[in-house]
Image (cartoon, rainbow, N blue to C red):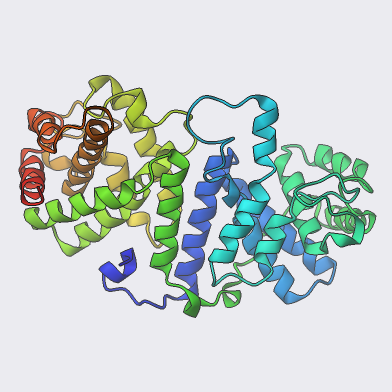
Length: 394
């Protein structure tokens, strides 16, 4: 059962909610790739303008918009951006070459997207002279829409417009088709290099083919895969839902908690070391690190009008009940109860997984450690609810 089905939402959501969640998916992927999410709307808009000036079809222009949003999907789970020891530079570069292919596969699995989207993501790094990747296409073998996306990504990467113009002009016949370069130069001089935003082509999304909740769950799975913690959000959700029921949290709080569980790990996306491996989930030294991840996850979710109401829970999940947590030093009832549930369930899961992997201890030892922090790190009511949940299920 998906998030939106849990809260009784329409299983065939409006395209606006679908587009909003897709944008969030793209923003998380941008974070994984080290690309600023705020650049993406400009890339999408410029790519669409290039398509219009080149008189491409409406379907290609629509697909270009979503390909721009999702161009970095392949970075989620890519070894070059994953956790652990850094790869040698050459090996990391080879793994980066796989990003367009992996991203295209993910786009193919998101059925509401316009049909050409996956191909445009796959070929967005091809070069006119055949030295691009992954398929070394050349000349007119590269779809013009894919060339437009490559050009838009290149232009937006530069802070200085004149430098961007000079670079693209200098790459004519190498990275970019000569006619594509001429179209770009024409646009540049007509608009002064200022990108006029274009609207999201909602009409191009077929909301009948998948629910928004399914896409949210897919994103949560990809976040866990990227962090090397498969299945984590599902385990945390199971504990959190039972604890929330024991605490008799309101339906609204439980809805936001379910959302926050799916996205708390997004704050770890661009960190080379898994949070639980740097500091234990109970270590006071780790508060600052956990708060950094909490703030990062909240900042990503705030971008979503559909899911953004859960962002305060993400931000508060590193607060301590006694007021010594971060980032805001909240205390007692000032901390949202659902955030306290989230915090305790994340810590319990980390302790439980560590016990299983290293010492094969039973479920009681993690719970004992959680109980020692009742009244300091965790709300005593939440600890009692979690203990009740664990005892009932063991």
